[in-house]
Image (tube, rainbow, N blue to C red; front, side, top):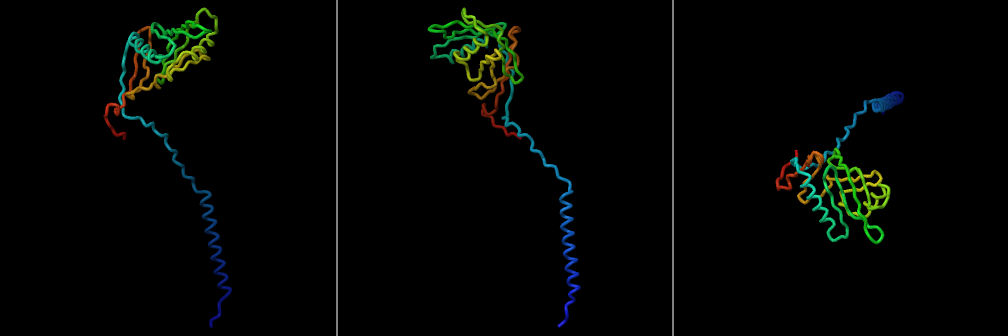
Length: 207
């Protein structure tokens, strides 16, 4: 039976272990110093805008005035509240607020300011409530509390203004409306109407 060369076997095992250790060290160093790949930042999700067309519609103060008050009459139907809006060189709101066992007349004059998103802010220009001497903000608080307003109209007593979120109006046809121009003195009133194709029964694929 041949004798095993023990010193040779141990030498081979030693060299093999050294090789394995060296390989492990190389792998660790490579992982530590390997350039980090940049993670692709997800792009913002694009708005799910449905195919549509936009139209600019121009009207007059008289036509818009009739439309606004028709809407108000429907809103107040069946209630004891009453107010109306008149469009002249500015926006005038006249109505009645409860006071004790009676009611008092409230009158506001507001200047419209078109916002970049197509909404309108009505800035309070002058305000009065009967013969009562009250701060403007207090009158606006009564106005907010007692006069019914559409959900998309917000009375802001602190800033003495009324925010009209035209873009939040709910229309049966799914049309979206925003204000383009609202110059009462020049009688230049323009609205942008966005018409989704699906409202007309037109189907289009979005690429």
